[in-house]
Length: 180
Ligand SMILES: [Zn+2]
Image (cartoon, rainbow, N blue to C red):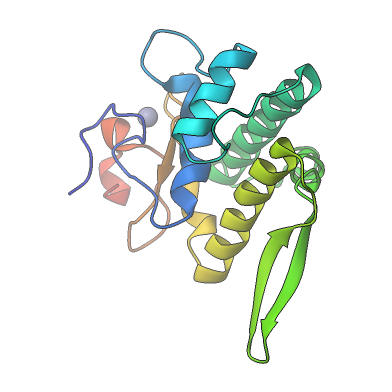
């Protein structure tokens, strides 16, 4: 069952690992009470609750600034995708932000490889978790369906599960043509 329209996932939660990427993109829209990542301590608490940061870990000021840049580039990238535009600047900024994760390929057995972070720092690890979620979603074919609602000031990140994959709006603002 989809969540009710107006919820934090735009009524269309993303499947599997893409969910955490969607949640991160939608932190600006969590309720009306402000930005859960706006203050450094609040951001650490949110990341812990999302399973992205170990208990007791803190963010430095530069980590926090990088986190906000990551979210902003992700939001810009999704908005461009929904609009059918290629935004090379947003893509480059997102690529740069994800590079903090230092994702590497690990050979786990003769037939299995995985993705991991070569970094030890908490911030790098959480960026790696986001980067790996994006990579796994891309492999599963779901990544291109994460979009941001084009209606007015909405912008909520939603998962386009429509047959046509042409939806541009969240459940609350669904346009009948696309059956989102
Ligand atoms: Zn919307």
